[in-house]
Length: 346
Image 1 (cartoon, rainbow, N blue to C red):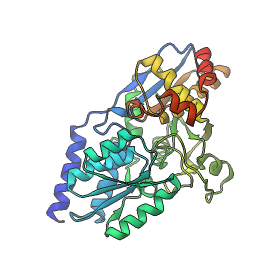
Image 2: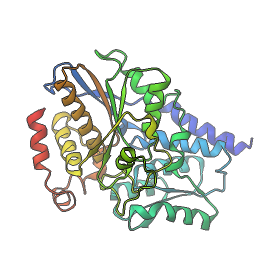
Image 3: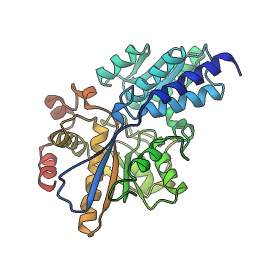
């Protein structure tokens, strides 16, 4: 093993050792007796999102498999958070990084990628990201990280402080320590794969519900079994939803899926801010809306238990989009009916 590989693995491992676990937040006062909802707050990672875990795993996987050397330019197709986290680890081990992303990506993410020394290469639509990333990597003799293929295999789903192990360990002292349902959205599909596999590996009596935004084909593929589905436009909920079925999406370990409207996703993050005083990204809205639907079903069925979902990143990254009323009206539509419904129910 070369000294550069040993040094790089050591640096990435040291980042893990410096990092504390993320918090599990219990939502209070939901008026559903015996049903508790928790948010796993992944926004507190050094790069501000759930994707910090994935980027660490992807870099370790690529370095240990000999795919990244000290002279390799790393290229990724990402709408933002993955690229931010990967830029951070690329700088850590001293290799160049290029993110291929839609031109519409939030400016705060673009600036943060640049802060970590990465470079952005823009395309017009999410549907163009993959092919353009392959092209850029080939032209530079670099390595296409390809999170959508490797997300489900780079993470050790059996343990090693993955997101699932962390959730279930933190739930141990709660009134309902084994969640009735864990709710997760799919971007690469890697996190839902990790959670679903861990539940089965540990023999836990929990259900995995995967929520999917508009303009994503995961839900339709899950319902039909057709893995060749494609969409002509990308999701408006950054970080989740895909116009094609990705290799990391593992439908066989998902218990149920739910389609969530963009208006419901955005209304939910504004509703959440009113409850906890913090802004979250739109994918958190998709996740939490799904969790709230499960809570309603449990109430109707006379069930008690806990539901866990994820706060994927902070809403501070989206002040010019999801927290800009004019942008929301133009790009999402009227979210007030959804917001009124949430306030009435909860």
